[in-house]
Length: 223
Image 1 (spheres, helix red, strand yellow):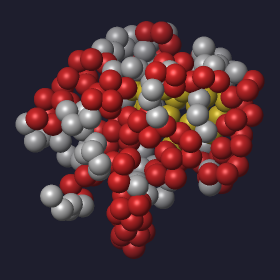
Image 2 (tube, helix red, strand yellow):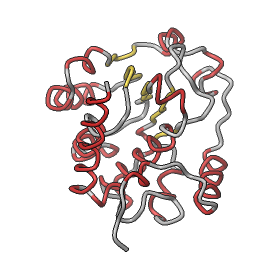
Image 3 (cartoon, helix red, strand yellow):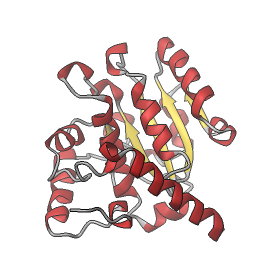
């Protein structure tokens, strides 16, 4: 409804004012933030344009084993990376209509790849504050310690509907019910050979050309 959309917009603006370092300071662009550019290229989470689930939702693919928290990155840096990807997905009109599906392949994840502040920051940001509908969360190859960690997170932050849309996947073949096999990454049995550097460079060029349609523009900031 219009009232609900207006309320979501007001909540988004308020969250941005309370958390400038996550979206606006510095501006959420890879050309303005070297750390963001580096982490985008690190394949922690990717958002290939062609990767669309059977229900029409665009897909975020996470591989948390690539998130090396020992190299000096901070939780807010990882969250900014995820928010950048969400900002790019929300440029796609069909994603605005059909939402997103999150697919995390947790193969090789260790406790060193995790930080409790990351889900706290990102979930407090997107849930109720972004025009984003999460149609499903699928967690493949989850180690035992992650299941306990994630259960705590869902109990604290997830609304009932999102809990119902969250699934631990026992085998890769189960994902083929969610998305056509050939659309997935090669490592997941599909045909998608995704080049993260090419994707980032394309969006850097769009930023430099002023061709980015970002949520940043919905707020005005003093110079």
